[in-house]
Image (cartoon, rainbow, N blue to C red):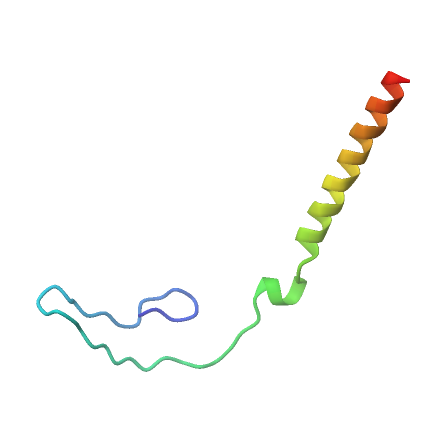
Length: 66
């Protein structure tokens, strides 16, 4: 079992039995993540940049043909 930061807080081996039970106390505190603070801005900027580049390519091809 790991906490919200990836630290191992408990473990049990299941190789000696068909199943294993693990009881661990974990904190229920919630801290902000980078994604929660910044949101989807990186994805939207990447999509806008891709659209801009595609439009430039189309514009250059039509200018070269005509």
